[in-house]
Image 1: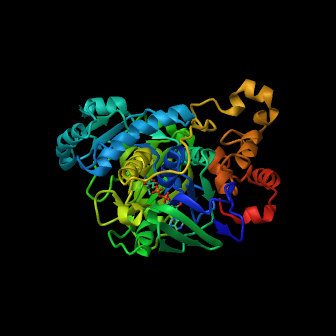
Image 2 (image 1 turned 120 degrees about the horizontal axis):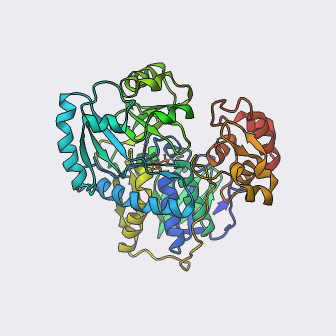
Image 3 (image 1 turned 60 degrees about the horizontal axis):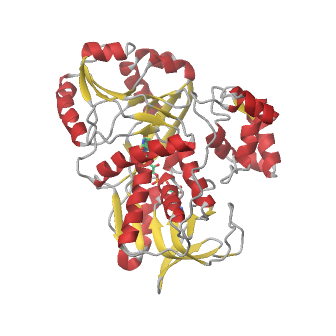
Length: 483
Ligand SMILES: Cc1cc2nc3c(=O)[nH]c(=O)nc-3n(C[C@H](O)[C@H](O)[C@H](O)COP(=O)(O)OP(=O)(O)OC[C@H]3O[C@@H](n4cnc5c(N)ncnc54)[C@H](O)[C@@H]3O)c2cc1C
């Protein structure tokens, strides 16, 4: 890469000026693809306009490890979600990423929904969820005694689980970088042009050359496609607003509580998180603005009304935070993954509301397409091992509870964020990780610091001072970056 300014994260490889593969987008999908290809021996550069990995849709979802029970049987999404569920469950286990095997209970509240359950059960079984079972009202209430009045029956899907979503992207990026990938953040792709044997990618501070281009730009995937002259799909951001309830609400439910889905959306759910909170959401609003991740009074009010029906006691619990994410919806119902062999180009678009789950299977699929196209890599296969991620799950042993870690390093025994039980040692480590935090949002996603009921009111200044010190950054500059 020719550059007049150093990239934010590791540019240990300043030459090659030409890579085997450029991956545009460092969300969960792009990082999964980069990991897979770097391990296979490709020299990979990952380009993202954001200042951190997973800073797009991947940081704001409902964190469910889906089975794909309600996907269209035979679709690419159905196949990749089912495969991705298994791959990611195994990977999370190896990397120490929190997963809670809660199961999901889809609740029918009226005649129409009840009538739909049998069809959904058949679809679930066709999608490989052979343990899916219809439950009567008594069994539904026995399992979830805090449900609102009027639950008629339910569909149990035992393999729908919750996962720590932030650590997934971070683990993929960490493994990719450890395997030699160059992660180049704060680097929007501005222009693409064809060379004799690949691509020239113009970024603000130089030009990157790559033989193959993988477009995993999420909400911007259609725009990258158009830079190359394709017009296969248009992204319409579908906003999902969510409410996070404090950990006191966690005892109100056992399963992920799902509504009967419609064509438009999976609907409003209530779900535990691996951090011990409860989520209520998301909304489904088609927008034009690809950056509008704001929440609205109407959206939150609609969620509370839906939540009160599902779990009446929930709406009396404390709200810790609200947020919104944008699904990369398109006019098509399936993923838009296409190999353009003549252009050495793969589009990975339209990864709507299941991309966290499907990420590893998407990467496997893309690697398969490249192999079929005869792509060859310039390096040997490399096995750097699965990275061990910080234990962020509420049911995991956190450093402040771990006597032997504290004995080795007292910084793990010094609380910094009391709400979320985060130590100084963890925040310090986040600043020096293979893919380090460079702002307070990055610290939140790597440690949980400032995510609790005070939202950083008490610990924010101490976290800021420590991060400024560890990263040698002016605290005033850090403070200006919204976490
Ligand atoms: C409300 C909501 C709930 C969801 N719930 C779930 C769930 O429970 N389970 C599940 O599996 N999935 C869920 N999803 C879907 C999942 O979050 C997404 O499918 C997934 O995060 C998509 O990842 P991605 O890498 O494709 O996109 P992103 O994470 O958006 O990454 C794309 C990246 O491309 C970068 N980029 C774009 N244009 C350019 C450019 N020109 N130059 C450089 N970089 C660029 C962006 O900065 C971004 O970082 C949900 C989504 C939403 C919104």
